[in-house]
Image 1 (cartoon, rainbow, N blue to C red):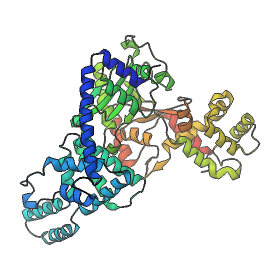
Image 2 (image 1 turned 120 degrees about the vertical axis):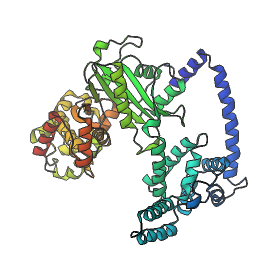
Image 3 (image 1 turned 90 degrees about the vertical axis):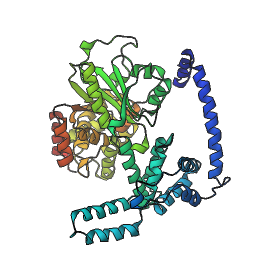
Image 4 (image 1 turned 30 degrees about the horizontal axis):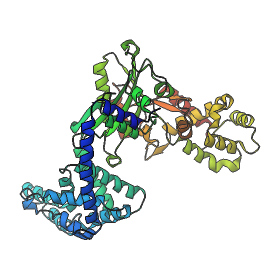
Length: 504
């Protein structure tokens, strides 16, 4: 089988793109040479030898309140110099650089304190005076570096640079490499700016087809985070008959899909992923509209780590629903077929502390524990045997073991999705995403993903989150405001079974 990237290269040549490829290569070499020169600057071979020097040169002072709309913008070269310097730093140097940027060029805390006092003093004066002092205070809360970030966004490649910069900041925070509150403030400032620049009104919905540029198809394949693309035939099928692939793009990041949604057009709501990613109609078949009654969202992937927390996926689903309704007016069933990452890890955590008890308190019934012992021939505790079974994943090949484990794993999984919380909301991130969107936790599906990844992550179980369009707004509001989860009778029945058996 020809690898995807080689196939795409051959297709480019076949379409007569040779000239474009050559020109791109020439431009890349020119940019590469320029980048090397800039790296020399960053490493101390140029005129700016230290981080302090580059920051003092590129981060302009915040204009006074009176001059905030009259000050000329800094030269574009300052933004370019900042970008090139940062790109030339090593990972540890980037953290030091961002720490200096956020701490030394942030908010003037002394000035804020003085203005806060003036706000308190003017509360008894006329409204116009109060509002003006409050506006001054609001302006003084602007970090000095915010102006630089805004100007970087206007330089070619600047928005992508800032998205990647925030990805670095997020990694620093999540890895606890720095506990600096200034870094967290920098993250909040970047998130606020990116949320404005990537608001839904500025995004373009693009359908990806086999005729899309090869570079886009490659990126769609590389970014697929839920069900990895195996080869070029696989990606061709995922954008072919009875399938749709949509992405949000942004004018400031051409050729970069921001979030990607894969949809299967089916007769009924699918209960397993094998039927979607492996059992296809022929690549050249014509779609029969009469066989399309359901739209199943089986994969949604965010491609830019720096856009974490910026709402994109929920808007993409809503836009795609409207798009599909325009194409298929009779289409009425919309559902996800979602993985359950973290379920196995959660279950292993429950089994771990209970090994000394011999039988995990209430996780399985006495009859179920006996069946596990008989099926495994375990000489030690059934809990240990079950832990090893789940860790290895070979149990899915045994019909006897699968039949013995199904009732217990289904009710445990239902509880994990419905009952396990983080700050009152669903612990599972995929569940939290769809419930925020107003979906109903509709159906658990046994042996829905028997791939090694599916078994290791969620014991092969998958879940449908059903989008009843007339109910999504009310469901979303109820979940966000009162943490109420909309769930079907099947889910609630399994949860009830868990509560009757569990002693947790």
